[in-house]
Each structure stands twice: as structure tokens, then as C-alpha cells.
Amino acid sequence: DTGVSQNPRHKITKRGQNVTFRCDPISEHNRLYWYRQTLGQGPEFLTYFQNEAQLEKSRLLSDRFSAERPKGSFSTLEIQRTEQGDSAMYLCASSLQGSVEQYFGPGTRLTVT
Amino acid sequence: KQEVTQIPAALSVPEGENLVLNCSFTDSAIYNLQWFRQDPGKGLTSLLLIQSSQREQTSGRLNASLDKSSGRSTLYIAASQPGDSATYLCALGGANNLFFGTGTRLTVIP
Image (cartoon, rainbow over all chains, first blue to last red; front, side, top):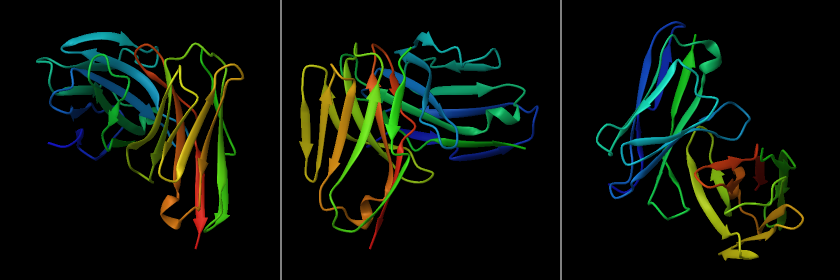
């Protein structure tokens, strides 16, 4: 395990369907972050976990979004009742507590048709 | 709210040229500043990290500077190569997350 992994890499779904993405951080990292990146923009922070605790959520994280990290290892991000505006790249990053450097995964590209 | 601006949005240069990418920000109360590289459809690769107490960092052909008082950072790339073609993002480190600019898309022409 040499880096952050995300699955799936691509997801195409129809509007109104639910989708779930998975992120596996670097094994010893206890902090995990989710970001969203739309076309032509920089990533925007969604939420972060320290171990299993979700400590901060952005206003971008509407009620249709939920993130979990039940055992303090991998995390899932679920979007319910997807909308076309949810189409974006969803990036996951991890870091060690006390370290400022975040390591990013390859992202999951979501297309809502 | 932190706002991060990157100029230019796109840049095309011939191979071998030296170039400078700019990043400006509105809130100087930052923990650090990072420069990332993003290839099309891919995740982010960290290039350089400057702590808030530092003025610059160097790695190979890359040099990044930070001037908190003026709210500016630059990324200098020496002797550009076609493999440097990518989008370059600067990100300001807050307490628990990163604030990104919109990026500069660099094309190095062979």
C-alpha cells in the first residue's frame, strides 16, 4: 500500500439514483479528507475525519451527502437522489495528525445523466 | 473567507523556457502554502510545501516563494519540458483543510 486509493474511478448514474464512493487512506494516516472538484475549478473542501470522528463539514455538504469512517480506516461518501449538479471529481486525501501534508488519491469521477 | 486567485489561467511556452506561475490570496493567516500538479483526469501530486514561517522552497527545477505580507506566492519552473504540461494548483493550508485556487493550465511545446 503506497498511496491513497479510491473506488470506483468512474461512475455514471441517472439523476435520482444513490451512489457510494470508497476511499482507502495510507494505512498509518489517521486524518481523512473529502474534496469535490468541478470542471475548470480547484478542489473544494467537503469534510474531514480524525480517526472515526467527523470533525468538520463544509456548507457544500448538503443533506443528500453523508460520509462515514466507521472503523477509522476506509471512508465512504454517499450521495442520495443525485442531481446533475453533483457531476464532479470527488477526491480523497489523508494525512498524519500533526502533519500539514495531505496525500491525494486519484479521485472518483461522477457523471449524472 | 479565504479567496485564492491564480494568474494566468492558461500558459503556453516553448520547451526550454523558464516560467513563473502566480498565486494570490486574501487572508494571510495561513499555516502553509502548497503547490500541486494535476494531470488531466487525475488526482493531485504535491510539488512543494512552504510553511508559514518560510520564504521559499526548492525541489529540482522548481522553486516556490511565499510573501504573506503581500498575499502572494510564485512557482518558478526552470528549463521547462513537455512533461511539465499539466495544471498547477496552489493551496493555502488552514487549520484542517486546504483552500485551492482555480489553477494554471501549462502547455510546454516541444
